[in-house]
Image (cartoon, rainbow, N blue to C red):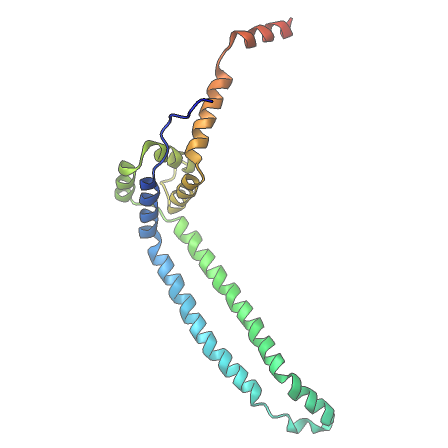
Length: 189
């Protein structure tokens, strides 16, 4: 079997991309972490107050419904308030998730400065540059953080080897072999 002698991206390439992405996305990650932490702390305080409020409800004014109804309300009171807490927690988690996703979308569309891009490209190996070319879909637009994130994911997924294999396949397909051309002439007769 033929050994693939084409160079592969190095760990240094992965490290360079990871560090560049960390610099470009650090603010977004810090803001999201702080917002989640603040909301969690505020919600924890509010849920404790809500549960305490539920424990403090007095149902003695509802004796008109009968003592069994009052006992039933007292028995299931904690479950009701914990269900309210669970529902509110799910709603808050949904909005936090949407906030983080929106923030990620916003940072993915952020453009990479020319200085940072030039510094990164001069240090990347040729196979890593090939993967970056492959990940940068629209050449009319500047490289964005999303393009660099896509490049980093594809480097880890061995995209450089796939690009080389695709190149070999294209060469094999385009190569004119005598047997293939004879077979084509026989079929056309």
